[in-house]
Image (cartoon, rainbow, N blue to C red; front, top):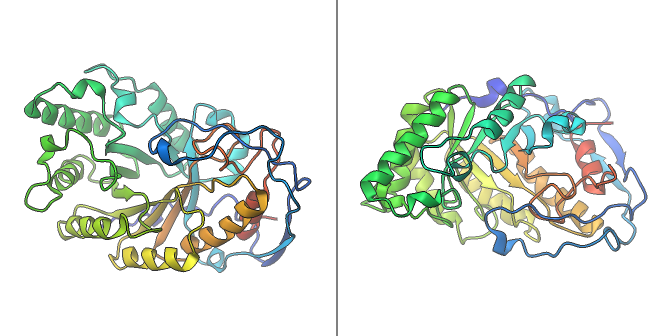
Length: 363
């Protein structure tokens, strides 16, 4: 089932100017105005790496004036969405609507948050995210049904049979409450972070990935109108994850169980664009929509962050197979990787955000 998610694609909110293709992009404030941030806790914390700092030193040094050529893709009818995460503060964040047009809940859609105690479901936070997307007609992607970082602690002492029943109940509960969500991340980070309960879904089995296949089979029945996505990180940056991920995606496609590929944007700093493009094209060969998820550029220096943005973002945005890109936060002190913020606590754009607005056609 290969759904055409283009029916919900909207022109990025940043994209408002098409006639001016050559625009001078400069910081909206003095070059040293950007600050560092504090990280939000999340999975992969061991790899976050950097230490939070004060305002002093952030963005030191002049940022070169850059000429930005707006994306040629803006003149087509196939423009990817450019979204961001939903947090508690998002409903009151007026800047959100001028920058982003897709929503992914940061952590509130994870199983351990919704069902922290067995059979006690807390939907309020996830309801808020879903309702926010509905109110503004933003595509919504559920993050995530199954992941190693998504495990309720109460599952551990259960038998295999009991664990299987609880997994099915979790899928049933989500699908009953949100039957019309556009995208469902069924399994996230299967290569790097497998759940302890995978035996309840069949374990490795004959394919080596029986547990993932079973999860997608359950999801296909329960989310017949949603785009089902397989997601992992380091897929486009190294060989560490890519080949295994590609083999798994192929198994799912052969069974008509997967509709889209999620490529996390964490940890791409320092990766050459040619390497990213090569890895991306290997996934594109599956003939499935590709989504850049969890994009952040964790650079303290403004110029380095700007240069990295200019390296990474166009590789994905200009690829016709890529149908959406989601940043993993953008406000200082309101995102996981502490130096990845694009907007300071004083509402000052960092140069990378200025460039992004320019590239997406904003004045």
